[in-house]
Length: 328
Image (cartoon, rainbow, N blue to C red; front, side, top):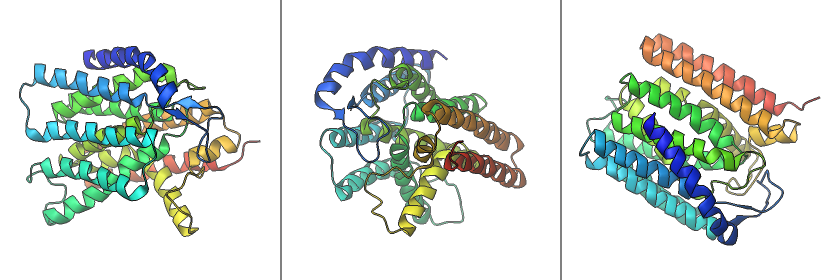
């Protein structure tokens, strides 16, 4: 609780201090992907990630003491991928070098993870880590893709990190990851008033990319403890919206790296939903998915996991269908 409050207070204090600089140097102008209609400063992710890493780092050292190199590699990679995002916010970077730099950051995290932490023991470790590299790289970018509506990332991160903290308190997540989740959730609460529709400031890539990395690492920690169903259920809405949208665009032979408004949440606003209606549904959906994730850990059986994953897929499909249907 104290970690979340401290991160929220620090982020809430830093954001208004940064905003004048962001107005001057990092103004996001409306484009084909945008849901805003006036230029808005981006880059408040500096406050979110700064508060998260500082508060979590102090808490971990104070409570847990010295930590293995793998944890500090996560912190370093988070700073690195935030720097990539900041550079892209200021002067757009072409796709290939951007992905290459992101892959280095994600790869560093995976390389530092002890070899005895496995999800599927029967797979060669090089194959599992290769799959995880692609999956984590996709997740980092889909969090960025989904950050296209006021309060959208808040509606995703707050319930998900809340669930991770509860899971950690019951021993399903390492203490270090629990502290990081608490700090990230608190920082997003501190950011929320400034991003409330109509937003006065955006996260920017400097925020969305490292948020994706930190959340992805927390989900990996869950999966390494054989809670794979929970690790899939918690981000299932983001996974479904972004992945289905990508596959649709590939099927239409569209240039998937270009800005667009094809995500379900974007189509929802075009179909008559207000911003608050969209993010409200996403928030409630994520609470439901968090409950299913917790239940999967509690029941701890393959049959229950399959049933709960199916239930999660159904409720996500219901929301996606609602977003795809024009409002009368």
